[in-house]
Image 1 (cartoon, rainbow, N blue to C red):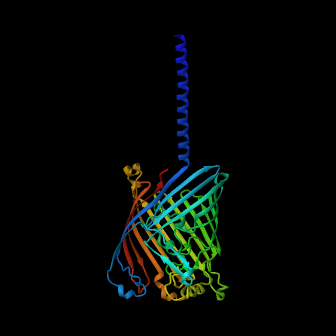
Image 2 (image 1 turned 90 degrees about the vertical axis):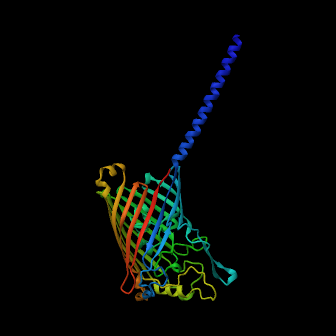
Image 3 (image 1 turned 180 degrees about the vertical axis):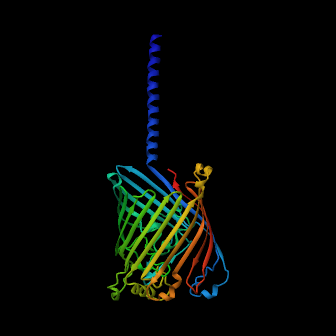
Length: 438
């Protein structure tokens, strides 16, 4: 009997050890999973927009303005931007981040030079819009964030809209028009970045491939220059970017940013000897600010751009390629301006801040107004033919935040064009979110 009791005791001890070991293993697995999840970052933003535009949407409404003086209107439903952001902290200062963006709910198409068709451009478009990898970078942090080195597909922080482009960072339903019309937006390219923050100062410098002047246009200036129609980005020319932010005053950010680089012949096809001296140097200077204090949000920007050799670029784009047959080149075949500029100012006041119940619930309701003046053809050859590029825009509306991550927007806006062209009023309604899930 004693032997049996001793045997049962040993079995019980073994079983207890096994159970404890299993419990410890389960606890270790849970701990590892929790640790992994704590390093994972998952989020994004998205916009839905409904518009009624009280003007004609015909392609020649500027060149033949007298044909469209009636009260024509058209409506549009759109998904301007929907993104998924994923990042991970590997530890020891190493992190990575990605952003996949769906623009207008579509898929991206490609252009190639076809050797079987005498070097002609071939393009196939199955659906409008784009799906693009807007960010993919690996980052190494030094000295608690005072210095970071980032390599990959990165955001180019020239101007206020590129740096702060989430829908909770501007009042209008669509992104501010001026910077969006003139520059790539959101501007992203493969490059190397050094950035960080020192007390009240933030900084960033970047080394990138140059833009492609073959994709410049009269209404869009250099907006499409960062896009590549190929499966790679050509880097025959290079560019530099710098940005500096100051946060010395509570609730106020003051920022300067700039871009400098060559843009001509940054493509597959050679330009020819008569263009040997053409550089297409692009210089951009920008100032933007944001004041978020006393229940007010006030934002503004001022941008100015200069493009050298604009006349030669215009001649090249309009004449190239010279072969006969279908032309699928990415060139817009349009005159390109020597100078372009954009000025914008918006201000909104949170009226819910004066109501105790809504303030306690964390809800906000901003009444806002926005003024913009921009010109994608401020100077250059044939300037008189492109006076419709000189636009003044006013917008008034509301932004309602039921929770911090969600905003419902409504606005009335109107573009005022030069005499001889038709003004463009519209009503826009939107709902958007921006935030991190993990």
